[in-house]
Length: 202
Image (cartoon, rainbow, N blue to C red; front, side, top):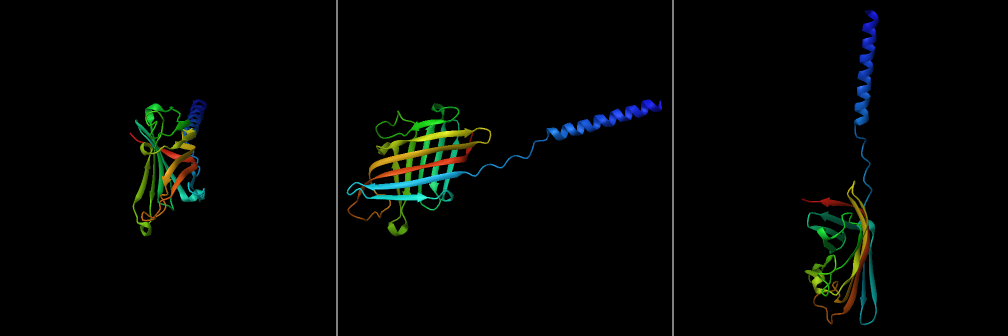
């Protein structure tokens, strides 16, 4: 009897320890921290009258990007934190790839219903230049370019890609409303984003 009791006790302790170890093994490990997002935004203005070029380059830490998707829309917005301008892209979520990865053309006034991404560019003038916001829309522009999604990490909901928007024959949005004569120019926005969070809304 003594042997049986001792043997039973040993088995019970062994089972208890094994169960404890299994529970520890089942616990989720500490999640890895998400990588820091990196965003690049450059603006170039080339004047039609003399070919003069004016480039503005924003450092990575000066730029923020947002991406959101729901059942109908997929949205990417890029904006320098130190400037009052924004470029945004909206796509029909039902017409793009489930993986999101791919190259998407930009809508313009001639092919609005054929191309992929509806573009809005806004530039807010400083108060000493008259204030107000200058807006450029796909429907009113003969713009060209692409939004390219190069990677999507579905597990961590992180998006990477690049963009370029070329808007020819516009007035310079960075000068005062009262300036005359108005100079025509080509405006180019170009940049990239890496590991920006993609928020999913119902």
